[in-house]
Image (cartoon, rainbow, N blue to C red):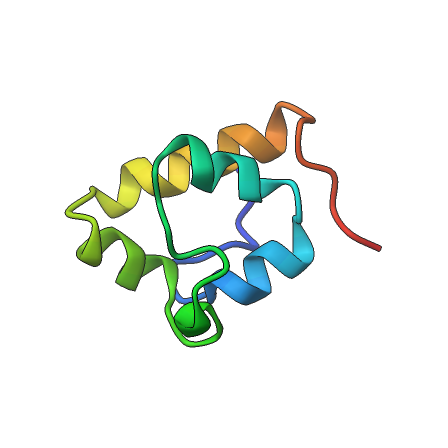
Length: 74
Protein backbone atom coordinates (compact mmCIF):
# COMPACT_ATOMS: atom_id res chain seq x y z
CA UNK A 1 0.00 0.00 0.00
CA UNK A 2 1.21 3.50 -0.83
CA UNK A 3 2.14 5.03 2.50
CA UNK A 4 2.70 8.45 0.89
CA UNK A 5 -1.03 9.14 0.98
CA UNK A 6 -2.60 9.90 4.31
CA UNK A 7 -5.93 11.08 5.60
CA UNK A 8 -4.41 14.55 5.93
CA UNK A 9 -3.80 15.11 2.21
CA UNK A 10 -6.16 17.61 0.61
CA UNK A 11 -8.34 16.61 -2.30
CA UNK A 12 -6.56 19.21 -4.44
CA UNK A 13 -3.07 17.87 -3.67
CA UNK A 14 -4.21 14.29 -4.23
CA UNK A 15 -5.73 15.13 -7.62
CA UNK A 16 -2.69 17.18 -8.62
CA UNK A 17 -0.53 14.16 -7.88
CA UNK A 18 -2.92 11.57 -9.36
CA UNK A 19 -5.22 13.42 -11.82
CA UNK A 20 -6.99 10.28 -12.96
CA UNK A 21 -8.30 9.72 -9.43
CA UNK A 22 -11.00 12.15 -10.51
CA UNK A 23 -12.76 9.14 -12.05
CA UNK A 24 -12.62 7.29 -8.73
CA UNK A 25 -14.19 10.29 -6.98
CA UNK A 26 -16.89 10.43 -9.66
CA UNK A 27 -17.53 6.68 -9.41
CA UNK A 28 -18.06 7.10 -5.68
CA UNK A 29 -20.40 10.09 -6.20
CA UNK A 30 -18.04 12.33 -4.26
CA UNK A 31 -18.70 15.87 -5.44
CA UNK A 32 -15.69 17.34 -3.64
CA UNK A 33 -13.49 17.14 -6.75
CA UNK A 34 -13.85 20.49 -8.46
CA UNK A 35 -15.51 22.06 -5.43
CA UNK A 36 -13.88 25.30 -4.24
CA UNK A 37 -13.17 23.66 -0.87
CA UNK A 38 -11.04 20.90 -2.42
CA UNK A 39 -7.97 23.00 -1.61
CA UNK A 40 -8.79 22.76 2.09
CA UNK A 41 -10.69 19.51 2.58
CA UNK A 42 -8.65 16.46 3.45
CA UNK A 43 -9.57 12.86 2.80
CA UNK A 44 -10.59 12.66 6.45
CA UNK A 45 -12.98 15.57 5.84
CA UNK A 46 -14.40 13.84 2.75
CA UNK A 47 -15.02 10.62 4.67
CA UNK A 48 -16.74 12.52 7.45
CA UNK A 49 -18.84 14.65 5.08
CA UNK A 50 -20.03 11.67 3.04
CA UNK A 51 -20.43 9.33 6.04
CA UNK A 52 -17.80 6.92 4.70
CA UNK A 53 -15.29 4.80 6.49
CA UNK A 54 -11.95 6.59 6.15
CA UNK A 55 -10.19 3.24 5.89
CA UNK A 56 -12.47 2.14 3.05
CA UNK A 57 -11.96 5.44 1.23
CA UNK A 58 -8.19 5.09 1.50
CA UNK A 59 -8.32 1.47 0.35
CA UNK A 60 -10.36 2.47 -2.70
CA UNK A 61 -7.83 5.19 -3.56
CA UNK A 62 -4.85 2.87 -3.00
CA UNK A 63 -6.46 0.19 -5.17
CA UNK A 64 -7.06 2.65 -8.02
CA UNK A 65 -3.43 3.78 -7.85
CA UNK A 66 -1.93 0.31 -7.50
CA UNK A 67 -4.05 -1.14 -10.30
CA UNK A 68 -2.08 1.11 -12.61
CA UNK A 69 -5.22 2.94 -13.64
CA UNK A 70 -3.96 6.13 -12.02
CA UNK A 71 -0.48 7.19 -13.13
CA UNK A 72 1.22 9.85 -11.09
CA UNK A 73 1.46 13.32 -12.64
CA UNK A 74 4.91 14.48 -13.55
